[in-house]
Image (cartoon, rainbow, N blue to C red):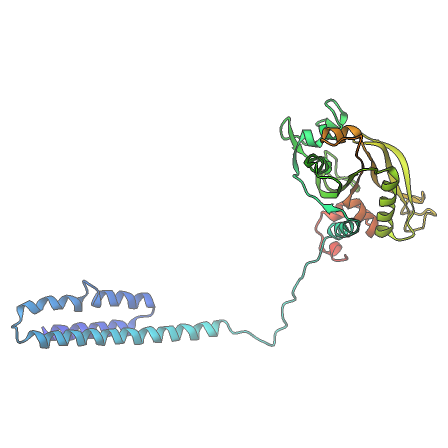
Length: 339
């Protein structure tokens, strides 16, 4: 029995020396020292020994276990050391090589223009409000004085999801939602993405960004509207910018107007940039229609207001003299990194 125990120890030590991984060491531990391991099982043979022989045999088995366990621990340390050395050799870094150039991003030209617009209007006391891009037709049309049968509701002009749900064609629904809350006065702008069934060309896209503004308070007049937009134009395009208001029609405003600014390239003299007209159209505006106020729960006899809307891409195109709207969406770094 003693000889058998010595053979088991020698076999275990031999296997430990050959082990090349921690998994193999674990298999050896289970095979010899586990509950059903060879060395552990030999204890069962003690019942065949004389009582006076058992203590000495038990001590031999315990010494054998200790010897194997120490060999396993030493092998584990050796394998970990070898693995670390191999890893250090494989991960050698040549510190003389040039470092990789870090590419840092920067705002998109549309984001730069939006930040500027928000800065200007927040400086006038406006708040920035956002709304859902998937909207009820009631907010996109009805509450903006665009009744059933109006040409703007044509499926060829708007992306419908169901009869009552669509992709908003303007950010004006945000204005209706804010007016419905009844918290007056209101001074807000609502930037966001809108969708229209337009063909893609140098000046049109089925998806673009719009910024709408709204003021509702007592004693608001057209003079307030003209003063606000004139100040906006001067801060956005230069202090010498002159504005011109031309009569127009929008269902949700009355009276309505288109706003032009003097060409900041030629000072209004006429050039290629303004098509020799001296003026550049930038936005539409008007006094909020009484029907819109009434449908949103505001008394038009007590409150008045004005609204305006401008395309964000149009501002970016004008401000940075970009000749094709599609350049803003192509993600060409050669173009975008200029800003």
